[in-house]
Amino acid sequence: MGEAAKTVIFEIERRNSTNEESYMEKFELPYRANMNVISALMEIRRNPVNMEGKKTTPVTWDMNCLEEVCGACSMVINGKARQSCTALVDQLEQPIRLQPMKTFPVVRDLVVDRSRMFDSLKKVKAWIPIDGTHDLGEGPRMPERKRQWAYELSKCMTCGVCLEACPNVNDKSDFIGPAPLSQVRLMNAHPTGAMNKDARLNAIMGEGGLASCGNSQNCVESCPKGIPLTTSIAALNRDTTVQMFRNFFGSDRMVD
Amino acid sequence: MENREFLLRRLHSLLGIIPIGLFLTQHLIVNHFATQGESSFNNASHFMANLPFVIFLEIFVIYLPLLYHAFYGLYIAFTSKHNVGKYSYMRNALFTAQRYTGVFLVIFIAWHVFETRFQVAIGNAAEADFNMMENILSNPLMLAFYIVGVVAATFHLANGLWSFLVTWGITQSEKAQRGATYFTLLVFVVLSVIGIRALFAFV
Image (cartoon, rainbow over all chains, first blue to last red):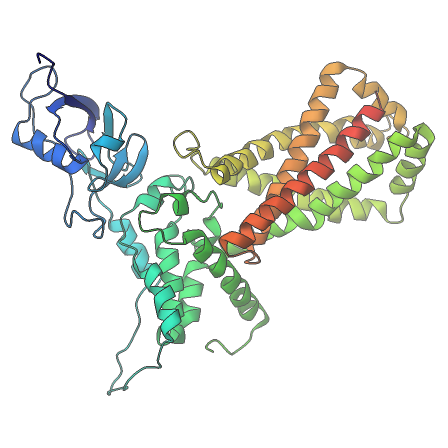
């Protein structure tokens, strides 16, 4: 016996508000079996004392589902963007460094504002218009195998990890990033959604759209849901090639 | 125009292969005549330099596409934030290398054109012949600069061919893109061997 109790060291990039300077603060907490980054942050919240023994403000972060389906708790952990709920302390090198995803405006500490992603979804019309002036009845059926394939694309939780990992999403570029592009492929694959295919393709052919992708493929490597983002982008590249010729040579047929 | 950026990017991708990629391949193959001796290279170089309408060929097949590709490419290179240190995947490393070689090639090609074609244009040299290259490459520093330049160019073309296939939606699936990686690797190796063999023929 007499062995020192096992501890975990966290190094957290903090700031009080968007425009304030950031600073690093270290925390040492008692180790518990199977702890993850969120349970460690909860421990810091219970007892906000840093490694120098000084009482500090509790670290703020976003979380919701705690099972990697909501996308709220994304942060940069040891240099890579991922969800903190599935980041197990046992699998991380210490000290564990937590940083906000600075591709987005940082609200406070680890909380970021992902509004731009939701604005992008609006920009690319990532929805299926079904309203008419009267009941339009049922839409066309989707083949079961296609549904299973489309389901994978629908797993996107707008978590922002692909935008953080993308070298072309930054303050010098207005690239909307991989996530909303893949949603265009999903909506265009839907039998009813396909009726407005050209509108979405023309939207992603605009400023900051599909063309800003530089094929670094960090997105597909980083996506926590395993969405084939780069395949989606390449497929949209083919669709926009066709759309480009239709626009340029003036075909009047825009919907299949 | 609403989709100006889209068209500019597509044009950048297209011009990189047609005509610039084709021109580079042709240029390296013609240079390879140097391995068969001085007169063999001079004949080939003389033939190329005296093609009919050569100034128009140069302007529309080389200068204009190359200038557009270079300047728009610089804009692309300087609007990305490189993160290969944190996300050290192969494609990200190649993405970064594509931008670094691109910037280097702007410098290398500007220097190369100044030393050869430009000297002929202003009358300092009668023709870009074997002797001219022999003189340039007799300096070991210039030889090293040219080797790096040729390898940067063949890499930039081979990797650019890979992204051309993605950009135009030809290779979509992971499998197709992996196949293209092997194919473009072969393009890189073959063109590099041709280019470097030609360089050493002048030494």
